[in-house]
Amino acid sequence: MTNAIPLCDATACVQAGCTATVCRGLGIPSNQLVFERSARAIPGGVNSSIRAFKAVGGTPYIVSWANGAYVYDVEGNELIDLVQSYGAIILGHAHPKVTEAIRSAAGDGTSYGAPTPREMKLAEAIAERVPSCERVRFMNSGTEATSTAVRLARGATGRKRIVTFHGNFHGATDALLAAGGSGIATLGLPGTAGVPEEAVANTWVLPYNVVPTLDEDVAAVFVEPVAANMGLVAPVPGFLEGLRAECDRVGALLVFDEVITGFRLGTGGAQGKYDIRPDLTCFGKVIGGGLPIGAVGGRKDIMENLTPLGSVFHAGTLAGNPLATAAGLAALNELTDDVYMELSARTRHVASMLRDACASAGIDAIFPVVGTLAGMYFGNALGGKTPTNFQEACTTSEETYAKVFHALLSAGVALAPGAYESLFVGLAHTDEVVTQLAERVAVGLQGINR
Image (tube, rainbow, N blue to C red; front, side, top):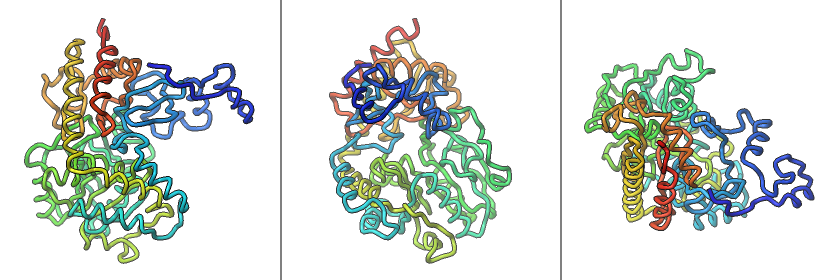
């Protein structure tokens, strides 16, 4: 890691009244001491569990600022960032069009509790790009989007049962936490404490990539059309088509969770790539340009079950926030078909570079790619075969991942601190950055098995 930029003036901190141990006599803060201080104010020192490094060990790096393809920790270390806020950042950190949109919006006020033109324009932009979204309603996170979609599906159909799939992660919504990938898998939990049995009594969790036989008690089937929370698992041919047909057969709603894939895989998301039209779609990440946001879009007749037109309640003081909608609209306006073609090519290049670097270091690894998304699996339990479901994804070697994670971190490359996340390559990962990335990966992996 490169000590590039001292980010803290200890004298200035003292003059400002700061007496924190992290600054005394150091000149710059320490990741360790900042994390320890955070843990005295925040449970576990983090506001999202995976950030605590429990799955990989060690102390989290504490990000001070970011630009383009790089993040910088409080010690001034520069990291090539392949996390990109877990997919929310696609243009690069602090993209000038996005930051200017936020600056301009903030000058007009940060929240009104009233309708704004910006939320209207972002809803129109989503509907224009995703034909299944005849109406769009905003909220503040992907979790709010999926919880709203559960309530809406039940209200619209008059049914209770929800179907999900092992390894899919739909946020911290009780009814969808019966089992899940990503953070839940990383922590080694089948679900989570605090969710009573009755909250998931009407949730079926079934194998991914197998079309289930539904009955007329099912309100909705929730699915990640490309599963990006158990590494990266693509839908097998016929899976999404089969879900659409089976939902139609019993009158259930098909809900695509495109919080990650929406505007990440392409202009129309996964549903555009695979030409499947869901009844409802959940969004987040990219549509906020890096600010907190979520959305549900779908058929007009279903969406108009939401209040004030229907009887399914939804509200939120900060829903449609002017800063988030401004940032999201700025981001979407930059995402042309040419950009997605370029990002797909870069993602393939990064994945093949990582594969070759691991092979040279004697590390068994595969890096599957779907469009602009890449996954990582370590070990040879599947004989080099790409996983097709959660059980197969769980054969990845978490021990090897932790070694690779720290080896690359020491060389100035940031991966997600968990073996079940995806890699995110963005527009800021230019050819120059990718060349630098290859150099750092080679250095980091050198001697890892010695």
